[in-house]
Image (tube, rainbow, N blue to C red):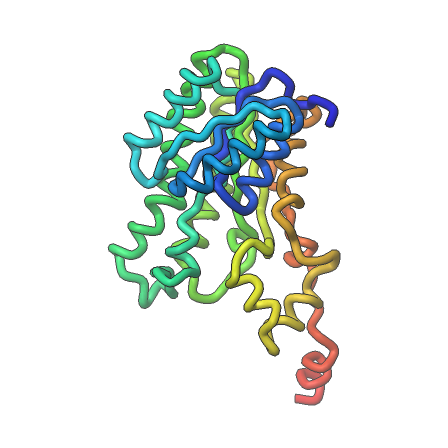
Length: 274
């Protein structure tokens, strides 16, 4: 690796698995001191240990970002451990409430206010709190910084049954722009990555295997299905000095799905005949 983040301190939320873990590994390999964080302590400590064994520098700090006090303590702990904060990656999201056994998201006509609030605490409020305390730490250090917000293509393309999650990601896109303007005088850049389908869960595997959804997903992807490492690269670029001229941007890492209107050939034939 080329040391593109040498001397930087990076905090990556939701980095005990999936895209967050891939980002933490890549940042450490490029010279950053990395704080791994999430709710699963065993996985988090294992990721930090793995980074250390590979020659990087990392520590694990447990935090649930749906609790503001824990977010405050997380940022304070990062500064105490490594002397500051230069890079904040807002990756954490309550996936179990979006698509797991505890799923609460739904169309707006069936979306209970309590369920909407529970999802937003992690997907939206937690993001705001991370920015509040993380950006404040960057300002206090006086050395600028980079915020990378992990958003989703559902924020720019409609999806059924996910109105609360869609609203949260749309808000992340909008505030990426407003924060980029607000904190530019402090040398802080704020950008977003809009994720498409990334293979990190059993749910994604089942979608790909589904007889109806699988072919549609394959033809929509102009490249291939995404992997966590496909997000680590763009995150590294936006966090590094190579992106010094870029702020307020929305980078789509989705295999081309949001620009592709093609249908599988058999479905297109059926639509034409109809």
